[in-house]
Length: 164
Image 1 (cartoon, rainbow, N blue to C red):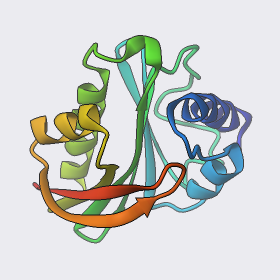
Image 2: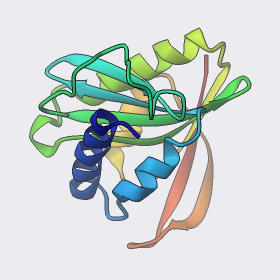
Image 3: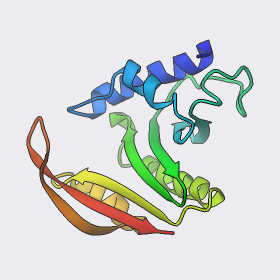
Image 4: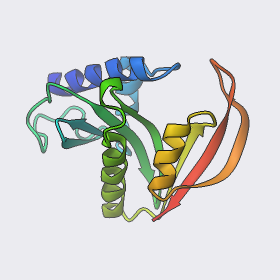
């Protein structure tokens, strides 16, 4: 893995740690991006940077040659065939409520359109009203509930989908 990519993963891991009760470690994030079907979009100072797993993880050239100083948000998603799954999304606490989550979702959906994806799925804590509101605003619909899916604390998961 290139130093530049490792630095991005470290920054994402720090934001992950302050955003979730069950954060993914740097090692988990690195493992995630060892697969080419996993993608990372980061948001820094109003600009998005997109990275694809495996092929780019060790590459010397990237579409953007810089590592942003500040990562204010990110989205991690996977795509296979004509479906995608939103795995993680986070926005820095000091930037929440400024539309960054919305911008990240829109950028993810734009990218997925280039992959000919027809459906995006996600799971969200039932008590996470801001996230559910964000997803509903961006065209996702509730389709099911998984009882006691989350741990620490135990909570149901709402399964949502968007048909593109």
